[in-house]
Image (cartoon, rainbow, N blue to C red; front, side, top):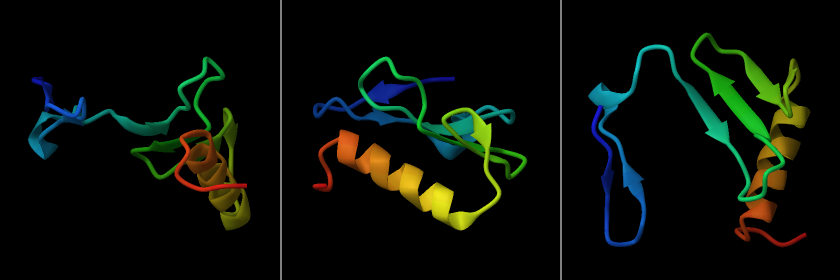
Length: 73
């Protein structure tokens, strides 16, 4: 798998380069661990806990965006 970092420091990965067993993980810059993790099988975890309702997912995504400075509280 090859990762290419552009001049802005953004990591670019081709779709064909992503391993079959992968997750999308939203982790703040602190060492707090992932806020939101989307598994390939459709499971969604918020702070390590399997989530079943949409509100918890939305709240976790908002928290991640706030920690990254994209939205204000």
